[in-house]
Length: 423
Image (cartoon, rainbow, N blue to C red; front, side, top):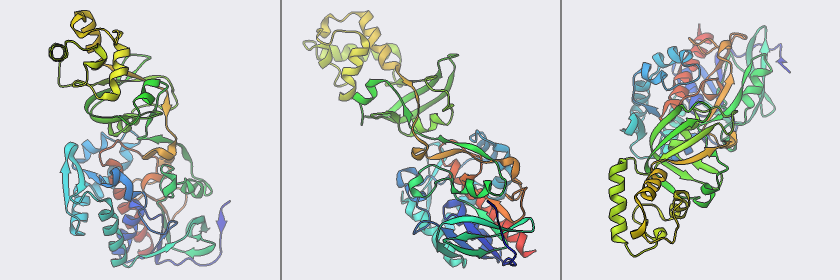
């Protein structure tokens, strides 16, 4: 139910709900324009999810131009044009370096702190909040307050907080243990906003293939991956890098990226093709196999692959090749070597679905962009209500794009909220 009050709002205050990257950026941006800012964070400290991003390293942006950035946003990219032009990747780099966090650019133009510590990014943002005069309070917001067609505050930990503008930055539903449990959707829906059904994105993949469980814990580096659509034979995604087998299927950087290109509702439709030796063509690989066979000429086939494959893969590859594990390598035929090469160059794993949204890095879905002004991040339904970050129905691939979206929409929402009460 919508909460309505008759008391006059504190017109000079911006209330930011959620102390993640979007929320802290919104709070800092509003405060720098002269607004009095209250940041309400349900956890005992801000940036809890941010602290674990990028395996604790924090890939905070991608060093690319706006047009290329938008190509990496599969959901509603045009909506972000104004936000990215207001605060883009160069602005993010400058922001953190001026805050005392040196940055570096790695493969794929991914930007990290030189220290490889996500905590340095969080600590810098908290410092800037305090330096800018932002008042940080701990408490869960349970409802928003309205008066005369505009939002004018919220109920936080049972107490009413009045404000001239409210910025919702509560995140999505991924990593719910960090506080992103979808409360922001409920707060907005209570005021008439539509939510595009939240789904997991950048999430591990489930496979019914028992070979994954047999190889669980095995990490592969420098392998090539293709995700194919079994219905039409098309390749949806290609990548080169790292991945890992688990008891439930597949995970790792490439797998997470691949999931963003797949429809999680269409189970059993996709297949992962893994090239275990992408640097070797079939002729070169055959020469390598012959060399190993010569080295271990008196061994059984199953005992001859220790130089070519990780130990955990050998039994699985042997079984898939169709070659008798006890056959001496000096009697293996050319056709059998070709079958072995085929398994190594195209190790197939059927995909049956996604892991739960709680394990996803990013939430696909959220508050409909049709109800948000892209030039200000303000609700089109109620004045004084702004949105930023993962709560909005916008998501991107891995590579620093999602955090940049949080920073860009946070700046635009925070500044717009401040302008709306200071004019």
